[in-house]
Length: 120
Ligand SMILES: [Zn+2]
Image (cartoon, rainbow, N blue to C red; front, side, top):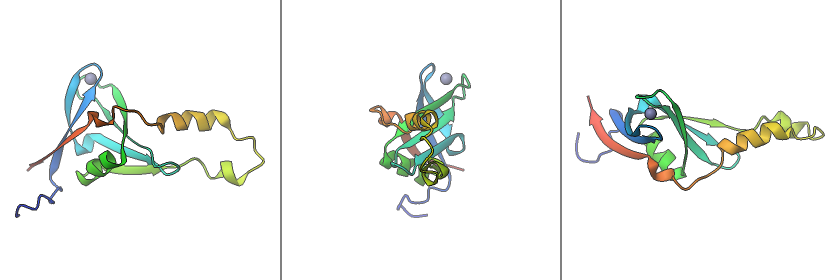
């Protein structure tokens, strides 16, 4: 115990926004964070507990840090290495453009507010 506030291994509550339902409360187990190793762009995704819609939001590095510190599972992804090793291949633009969309940044990254509320 103590007041260092670093014991984040309990269940933190994460408040996020569903476009249909507005603010929803999630646990760290409901949220996943993904970081693109190519440009460090992060995003997080969750399924709305009310309408079950999958929601994906971009996340600034500090938000990624905050979510991970809360216990959210982090995964990284990259464009397939084969794309670069087979340099002669006409860079499969379809694949690249579709993945880089989810890798893009946006301004509403602060939609996620992480409550470090520790529950038992
Ligand atoms: Zn919803």
